Amino acid sequence: MRILNIVGCKNWAIDHLVYPLTQISKDIKVVYHFTIGKPKSTEYNKTESTHFSLPKIKGYDIYHFHSGAAARMCFKNKKILDIMKGKKVFFTLHNERDVDEILKWWYEGAFMRVDAFISPTKYVYNRFKDFFAQHKGSASVHYIPYAIEVEKFPYTEYYPKSDYVGYNGRVVEHKRLKRLAMASKRAGYDVWGTGYIEDSSYWRSIMKMDNVRMFILIEQKDMVDQMSTYRILANISRPYIETGTLSILEACALGIPNLVTPIGWAKDHLKHEESAYFVKEDDIGELHKHITFLMANAKLREKIRKNARKIIEKYDMDWYLKEHIKIYRRLK
Image (cartoon, rainbow, N blue to C red; front, side, top):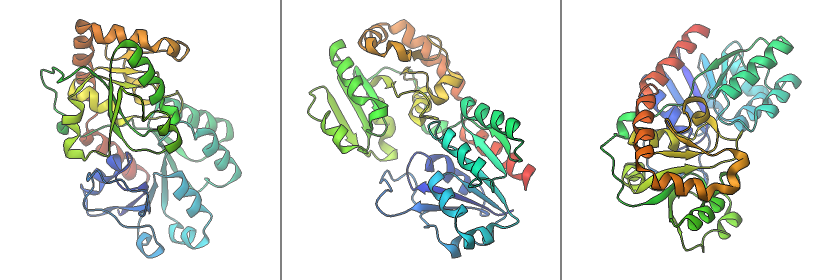
């Protein structure tokens, strides 16, 4: 059984979920839709860099798409459809924002070639299940929440090297770094983060703030040291966009308390003041008060981080890979 994973960009977050699949079998490969311009130099993936092309996608039994753009391109190309004819096609939707668009395309025929949808969050899973129940679609739907290589983010008797509010991820408006910086400043704290600039105009509105420091594209080997400077990790993205983020899982593993809005993986697996600290969307205007409270409450932070570590140990990469292999074998 030969499996080809089709991903958007090398070294982006999704690559952290797909690249490990390629390491467990010589029969599982990966190709990238974009190999020029968009790849990020985090040095996470040092071995796989094959660009998507017709010769490179021949001879597989299962085609697993992790990119909506790549899937749309393929399903409109007769030569590619001929290559995939009679083969199984999987699609993982790696964000919540596009679920309506994907279902619309499926209904109109663009995604009817897909045999199985994999959903990283309960929201996406339920939307797919409800849709196919209503429209009697033939595709199966599976729920596989995200996981990380837990061993690379070792829990310690954590004591932060500083009292920074941490931020990991793209600099893009829906992640609300600017709002986080303003609230942190009002609470008396600096924001230290790492990521890359996706929205340069948005970044220009932040870069001169005196309590923000971003380390652009830290290499993977330095990530633990970077995150060890955070007293908390904040992810206040708007809901129903993200399916992760992976930084939330990494913070759980390291023992860094998460301050989050109800998004993605956190919404599905963490509980307020038990394994994370949630800020409701309608309370985001009072973010500074929540930062002040959590940063000052050492007992609560200790409770959160210990409980979160227990949860993340259920979602290590070995478990994640086995869940995929089970579905591949069941539907081959």
